[in-house]
Figure 1 (cartoon, rainbow, N blue to C red):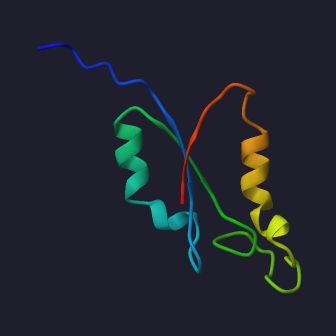
Figure 2 (figure 1 turned 30 degrees about the vertical axis):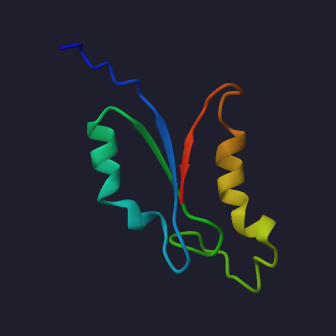
Figure 3 (figure 1 turned 135 degrees about the vertical axis):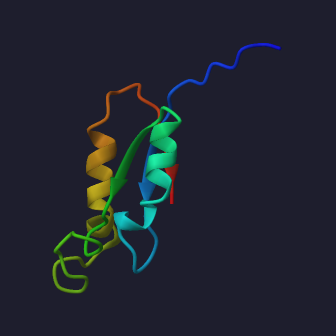
Length: 84
Protein backbone atom coordinates (compact mmCIF):
# COMPACT_ATOMS: atom_id res chain seq x y z
CA UNK A 1 0.00 0.00 0.00
CA UNK A 2 1.35 3.43 -0.95
CA UNK A 3 2.11 5.98 1.76
CA UNK A 4 -0.28 8.89 1.99
CA UNK A 5 1.40 12.30 2.08
CA UNK A 6 -1.04 14.99 3.06
CA UNK A 7 -0.04 18.44 1.88
CA UNK A 8 -0.85 21.24 4.30
CA UNK A 9 -3.69 23.40 3.07
CA UNK A 10 -4.79 26.83 4.26
CA UNK A 11 -8.48 27.10 5.12
CA UNK A 12 -10.13 30.53 5.50
CA UNK A 13 -13.42 30.08 7.34
CA UNK A 14 -16.16 32.69 6.98
CA UNK A 15 -19.32 32.57 9.07
CA UNK A 16 -22.89 32.96 7.87
CA UNK A 17 -25.64 35.39 8.85
CA UNK A 18 -26.07 36.10 12.58
CA UNK A 19 -22.88 34.22 13.46
CA UNK A 20 -19.22 35.01 14.00
CA UNK A 21 -15.88 33.26 13.73
CA UNK A 22 -16.84 31.43 16.95
CA UNK A 23 -19.17 29.14 14.96
CA UNK A 24 -16.15 27.23 13.65
CA UNK A 25 -14.85 26.27 17.12
CA UNK A 26 -15.41 22.53 16.56
CA UNK A 27 -13.88 22.44 13.08
CA UNK A 28 -10.74 24.48 13.79
CA UNK A 29 -9.00 21.88 16.01
CA UNK A 30 -9.88 19.06 13.61
CA UNK A 31 -8.28 20.85 10.68
CA UNK A 32 -5.26 21.90 12.73
CA UNK A 33 -4.76 18.35 14.08
CA UNK A 34 -4.76 17.17 10.47
CA UNK A 35 -1.84 19.54 9.83
CA UNK A 36 -3.68 22.35 8.08
CA UNK A 37 -3.45 26.10 8.63
CA UNK A 38 -6.75 27.73 9.63
CA UNK A 39 -7.75 31.40 9.53
CA UNK A 40 -11.15 32.57 10.78
CA UNK A 41 -12.67 35.99 10.30
CA UNK A 42 -15.47 38.06 11.82
CA UNK A 43 -17.15 40.06 9.09
CA UNK A 44 -18.03 43.69 9.88
CA UNK A 45 -20.75 43.92 12.51
CA UNK A 46 -20.51 40.24 13.47
CA UNK A 47 -18.83 38.27 16.23
CA UNK A 48 -16.32 40.48 18.05
CA UNK A 49 -16.24 43.09 15.27
CA UNK A 50 -17.77 46.15 16.95
CA UNK A 51 -19.05 47.89 13.83
CA UNK A 52 -22.81 48.30 13.65
CA UNK A 53 -24.75 47.26 10.56
CA UNK A 54 -26.77 50.21 9.27
CA UNK A 55 -24.61 52.80 11.01
CA UNK A 56 -20.96 51.84 10.45
CA UNK A 57 -21.52 49.27 7.71
CA UNK A 58 -23.64 50.46 4.80
CA UNK A 59 -22.37 48.44 1.83
CA UNK A 60 -21.47 44.83 1.09
CA UNK A 61 -17.90 45.98 0.48
CA UNK A 62 -17.74 47.42 4.01
CA UNK A 63 -19.31 44.22 5.38
CA UNK A 64 -16.74 42.00 3.68
CA UNK A 65 -13.74 44.30 4.34
CA UNK A 66 -12.24 42.11 7.13
CA UNK A 67 -12.17 39.13 4.75
CA UNK A 68 -10.74 41.21 1.91
CA UNK A 69 -7.95 42.47 4.19
CA UNK A 70 -7.00 38.91 5.15
CA UNK A 71 -6.95 37.78 1.53
CA UNK A 72 -4.92 40.85 0.49
CA UNK A 73 -2.33 40.10 3.18
CA UNK A 74 -1.56 36.64 1.78
CA UNK A 75 1.63 36.06 -0.21
CA UNK A 76 0.98 36.47 -3.96
CA UNK A 77 1.04 32.77 -4.83
CA UNK A 78 -0.59 31.36 -1.71
CA UNK A 79 -3.76 29.43 -2.43
CA UNK A 80 -6.49 29.07 0.18
CA UNK A 81 -9.67 27.09 0.50
CA UNK A 82 -12.40 29.61 1.25
CA UNK A 83 -15.24 28.05 3.27
CA UNK A 84 -18.44 29.83 4.09
